[in-house]
Length: 236
Length: 294
Image (cartoon, rainbow over all chains, first blue to last red; front, top):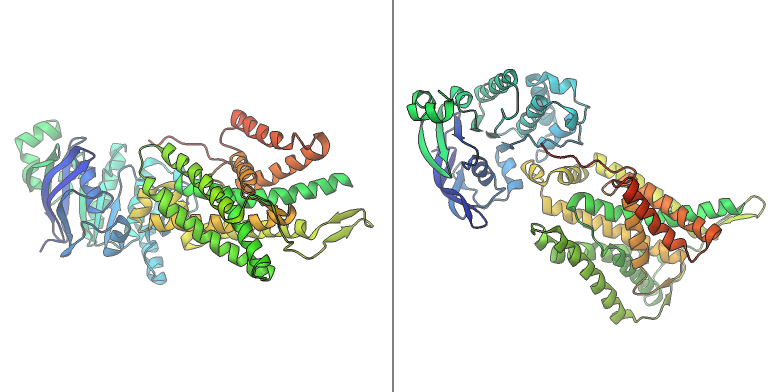
């Protein structure tokens, strides 16, 4: 059974249909990429999965439970964390307070400290800046903070929306190394990216979205070699 | 000596404005709306305390507690019925107009229930106060208690927002509702809590205000409400220390205006402050710059 299963999802903004019946699944331990151009519906899909949007039709099933109508604030304690597009760290809270916010629903004090130590180990720069306001961090550091904050909830699956957006190529590589190591430490990853090449390079499988529909799916390696993908998304 | 006496009276009036302004500023910071019915909750609080003392013969302390409970429930109910359905409305104007409507509704309910005649508000604070400088300076008990209560509220509120878990949730919601939800924060519950706190403070302010100016009418809350709104804007709306400082300064300006210029101009002076602040520093003394999101 898949860990996360999305079935025939249809999402509307008012009268405009953004998602036109998509289905995909994520198995435990996988890194799955959703790729596609701007406006293809990638972010809308993630928002629907975590309950920020409600679909008109279709289902989201997580670990066998239908979570389609579960409100967003109840999702994280089920083991699903969402790193939103544009980081959305709390700018006026310190780095430390942001990370603590990630563990908002957890009550196990000692284990929270342990998670915090793990996050600092993974992102040493966050520890250096723990008392700094999050708004004063650079884009790359904010991305790390957003990821660290999500990891503080001890998720089984982490959803990442455009983690490479607006970052320099060096930082993009760094962020993708981190995503890989998060996956290697046992967390399932659902990654949304415009940077198809990077996404496919770390993903196991991928789905290609175009104007609200999945037009192609397969192993990431095969998609990297696919002519239509090369032409449309890899600029080759 | 009269200068010091005016200053202390100003601080006392300003303390009441500050307590009311805290309600305005917290609701604005978290729900991003101006709750113009906030002033009328003060009036309801004052009537509740009045009824509890005169009709039911309760002790002032119990009466104040009853006023707090009634106003807290009232604030949450108003939010639930009138504002929550409009939270995702296309225009923030609809919430603003609704708030003005709620304000008139509360005034007219009070008119119906208690009549339009001013009712004398019994003194809650029996203590006669302190006399200093060989009897030249007398500070009334109400004045001392008002300033003291305001300081305590301020300290407790700042600690609550900075340190407690619901306080942290409030800060997160005020910055980014969507991201707060992703952290597992119940945004609706957090907004309801904010209204509850703001309305409880309104009840306290109502009792203190009517203790200093001992009469209640259905319109009692309107003027201090609107002045506290000016105080919140003056201090920087959304900022808790801003509401505190704005309230105190406004109270002092008003009393000095009454004493040294003319009492007829005192109210105009307060609103002149609003106009000047909006011209010179639209974000207020401690207000945040509104940053464009990249």
